[in-house]
Amino acid sequence: MSYNIHLLAWAIMIVAIALHVLMAARVGGVPLLLSMANSQIKSSDHPRLWWGNLRNWLKHPRI
View 1 (tube, one colour):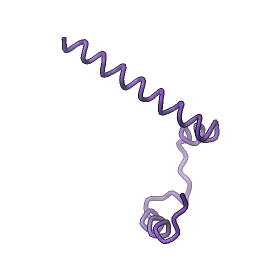
View 2 (cartoon, helix red, strand yellow):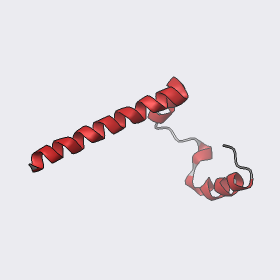
View 3 (cartoon, helix red, strand yellow):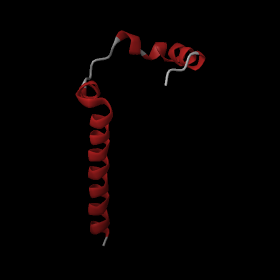
């Protein structure tokens, strides 16, 4: 019984990941998928800048 639950959990995880990738492809296309796979960090993404970026976004939200 626990083996079946384990397999069901893995199946749910695979479906969830597949749906996530498909929705990302639908919303942002190939550029978004490539940016998700890119492991390089831009200098503007440094953790020291996160607080300032958050405050700036809260002052001027872009949605």
